[in-house]
Image (tube, rainbow over all chains, first blue to last red; front, side):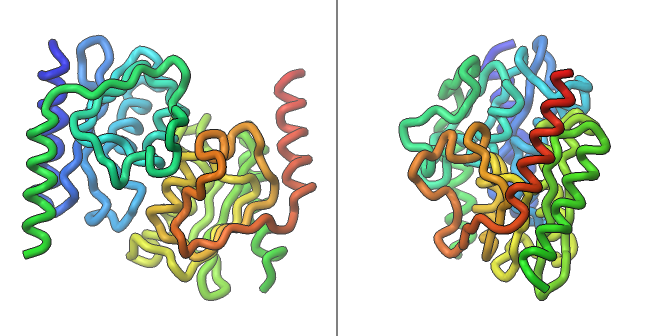
Length: 146
Length: 146
């Protein structure tokens, strides 16, 4: 089980969002080589700007484990997290975050600059599927403009 | 209907959290002089570190309005928001945020420093019930240490 495999699971979630007319972002939470939470952006469907892929995947993982901490888990997400999701990931003490595409405009870096908002023990990495995720986002916003 | 009145509603939510053994923070969202969302911290009960008072109150307000934006609403919250909640409030484009007690340790300022994480049109104010909220928090943490 590789980062590539799990990021592909997150990409599958992102494509569900795309097909539903949502900004195409997906996420999975993995522990012990198993997906314990998954989510895709549902902001439009739920009329709720907090319904980001990461928030939904985290809440599913908390429910699965019956724990409010995820020290031994990894979040795979197709786009770099926003400030809200970074704050949620901080509280979760998640072990590792792997994102596919950077997001200069909307990521947490918009407001934190050089400060690391995550838990000191959380590892953050840019992982596989960067081009695939960037392309899906680009296609989505191009279609919206037409 | 004054800020004092609505902050007392948020304090009522905070006392519900206190009585349930949760960190005592409460929030209400108000539009047209009416409470359209309320919430208290339910992190322990739900085993979910994203179940903050503000997140619950925001989601209730989105559901009530059928809208994912809250430009004409005010959030009253008994403790200054954390980074996650600040990020959620940013996305909501909420008109005004009034908080009772500052939080040097856990507020969004932990990671944003001097940068304003909120929407440029959001007004942020420290409002009434500061001492009342600080005292409730202090009592809670003193009891937990005993």
